[in-house]
Image 1 (tube, rainbow, N blue to C red):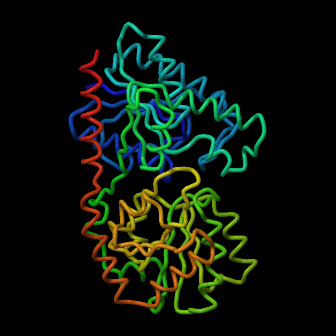
Image 2: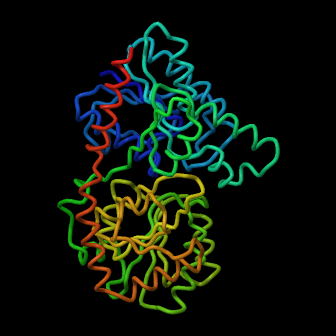
Image 3: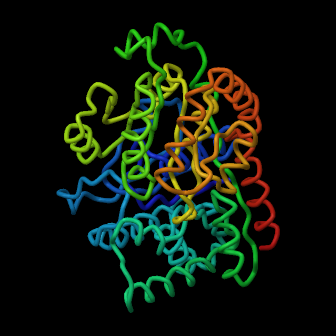
Length: 395
């Protein structure tokens, strides 16, 4: 099939949303589909890192000063999305795709407009939701309460009902949309791991030497966006509590933007115990994880987002400390060390419990290395393909 992917974001940047967009597209391409991605004017070119024939088509650089790569709302995105409508319309008109696969709520709105504007083409729209729009805006402190929050809730409810089928990245988000979506056509398509990225790399000892990491410490690593709605505030507050009881650990925080974390590390005299790596390339991340001993994901369930980074930890054979969320349990099973309560203290306690047991570190890591085989992008792409086929039959 010809598939037009709508990505209302500066694709590609090294963070979870973009990893899902990229890896879904690559896996669908392997199944024989022809994909074009419509996106913003900024972002890295994917063909410099992966072999692909996927065409990335960008809007014009009218907002040349807009260079924001990190996640989060911005009023200027309204203009970018209006330009994206034009780009997606032209691509749909000339390329005649059977499927419009739209990511995020903004992308779904763009896709719906294009679908209706070219209604005689009978293109089908798949809405790929990565979390709750309103909850994410609240988590970024872009919305508080009052009438404006009510307006965005109404908009989100409307968009949740758009498209011929909806997919989500987490069971929590699926449950929420099921309560809102009238046709109840929604399915969870979990993130996957590209296991090939973890093959043919040096040993842990060699990687630690290459990365100039301590050889005599237990390395606990967080990778991903360093923003509040990813739970980074839980982790930062937990680090001094962990170090107060165990000085034989070393933390890596890798991602972007790093300014607030660097400030925290300096103000709390933690430079001896914390390495901040920024920016972090998605394609270099496996080296850092293979040099580590424990992965940590402090994201709570507030935004209904999945935690794709957990799969990266699993692919590296790491045990994982996280909060006790349904999506985390689905991934990890017995391979997770779950905080008893969703607090700083709960996270610190879980890190300490795991750090104090090398036997459990090895056992949980081995469990995760096996379990990750069940979560591949290829399996996710086959489920998406089945959805495509199902809705096209209904033409």
